[in-house]
View 1: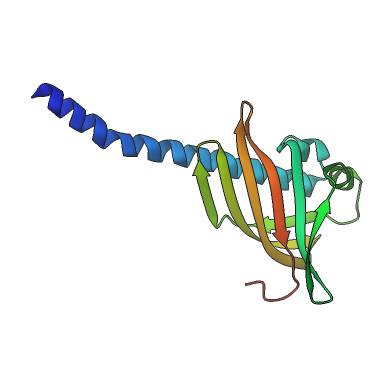
View 2: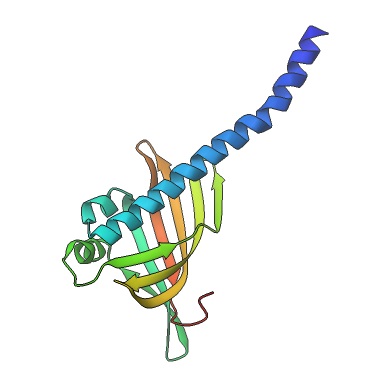
Length: 152
């Protein structure tokens, strides 16, 4: 009887333990993304680079002339642009909409508004793919949409 009660207790505890790990992983993945944007605001390419996995892919969905295109940005050029002094702070204000995690893969959906200093530039959604490496959650892919209206 004692063994049966122990098994029942352990089976009940498993979902709670999984939920705690999932919450911890979600918070850690969100922290990586928050650090990415902290670096962007500070113009700190080293801080931004610390959030990226080797081979990271940066893409944006563009609609030029009524035609949807996927544009690829070089991570090296992106980091160079972040670290080059610019007149206005690059301030991307995000909220966390969805965080999905399976094992060492996280998918994070973040609506955003982008400001150059205090001037609104554009808005859209970011889709982040992260992988949990030995050093923690790292961004392996970012793709975003951009528009100037219908932001909320």
